[in-house]
Length: 194
Image (cartoon, rainbow, N blue to C red; front, side, top):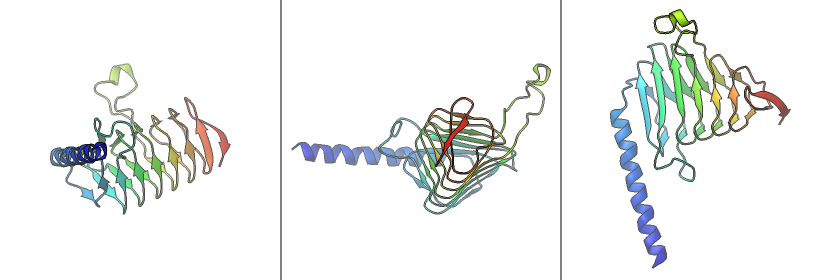
């Protein structure tokens, strides 16, 4: 009896999640979406730029936090903005990627944990006099192939992370991380190699 009950609950959860994924696809407002990622969690994609997904890109993970309660958010502020996610990338639940007139590029075979945030801008000028009216700085973010980004990591504008690198849980990446490095902390610093 218990196994039948679990099977019914499991089926109901999958149906509920399918409707959530469909709803977020319907309310997304980005006409420049290339490729068809596997959406296991809702993803809201907004903006005037281009979101490009390679083959076998997986968005969401059932056996992880925020699967039924959260959603991922991709925003392309400006027609020149791009988010490029290459083949075989796996992105866990509740991530936020915002590109302002620049590009976020994620290399093949990269793994990204829950609640990861990637920003290509500060979104406001740092000068107090220009904070509400000035133009913010922006710069591309590039993540190499086979990178492992832990949960709750924030990656800021202008950062390049080399291939095979590992970024530890909760780190804030403010500068470049070389290939094959392990980086942790606030700000993230190289502590070893793989």
